[in-house]
Image (cartoon, rainbow, N blue to C red):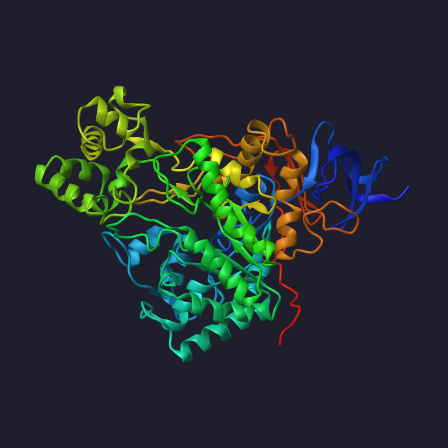
Length: 589
């Protein structure tokens, strides 16, 4: 009998293709699957998967892992929830090329931004690349040893990582690099050509496509025609266009409500139509503003109207797919302190206690009220979101009567308005801790997930379970960072029964592998790469803790990346067998 390096025996195999599950064993040699069999296999090492599911490793279709993998190469938060491949470089913000300028959107550690250029409301500009590199070296002892996109991929490959990584090239990064600090305008013809050149260099180095972040600087200032011209470069390489579509506009001062978000999806489809490049619409939400949280029938109507744009395009032969964040509160960062709601003034006060002291001044409270009600602070903007106070729930406070209540409920209890309640709570206890509640519902997410081309994107970074921001806004990784994929299975497969286990697995394996062109990934079959997760479908779950989001999920037993065990019985082995994928272009002309 042939002996394999590793055998997974006795599990229920869900192969990722959508085919029915079956009992069997998998034999692995090197980094590939050599056998998928109902017969007993002989292996140098055996994993007993009795009563467990064996599936392809999960693929995160929307990640920002590229920003932090240089710091956290073991990607603990990803592999511990069964993710073996991340699609990074999304929202237009990539960590390469970094030649002269470092855009603020790719500085994920806000402590560094505040040290380099303190600000009250919003940072408006960019940094000389050498200054940021120096700070990263001081803080994390990591030398940023690249400039070009190719150099970054080579550097990351040499660094060794625990997950596979799919790189995209970011529009915001190249726009900032080419236009420098003067990017609140259209590019000149020469600048547009230089952007095309940088995209061409990145695609030639192995980028899988171009991403945009059209609610962020500097991409928010770009017109559709600029993006079309740049996406045309991707066409020659057989790449993809992934877009954080125009949805909110620049997240700053805003004195009128956000309406007609659907125009952003229409624009994304039009770019695909005019370039012939497949489009991935990132972290989809309703194309229409409905507040407060609407009843299920209204949600379904809004989802249907949003998806009609996509379905009509698909009927015309345009390749459109999308991903959704499996969490009602987003994905990137979170802060557990209520004081963060008044971040500009917290920065000035210097501490939570200093802010509470200042709030005792009536004229200071009046000043804040005037600024906030005029829509000048994005963090609390009652014009954009008049129901903001319903989304902040107090979980720890010296005043026990307020614990478990939203700011809106406290306002009613204390016979004041929402801002009055916010000020009151902070004056009584500046260290009050909160849980953010979503402005969208699980029903909305579930309705999107029912669509055949919907994938899952966590919209987060690679971290360990120790990282935290030291100063305001005291960010911690969002709960999605550690348990988003587990929440997807718990909430939408097991509890809401949106789809079968077979279909739930397909959405996070073969579907994203097919859309992004990851040959030999996302399936369990002979000759495929051995990216595998062994989990219990009855217990897989995130551990939701509003005060400590850095909690690894339950139910993940083994994770194998390129044939090597990276997670064994729920513990990271420290191995780094991940690969930096590079697109094999169909054409370079």
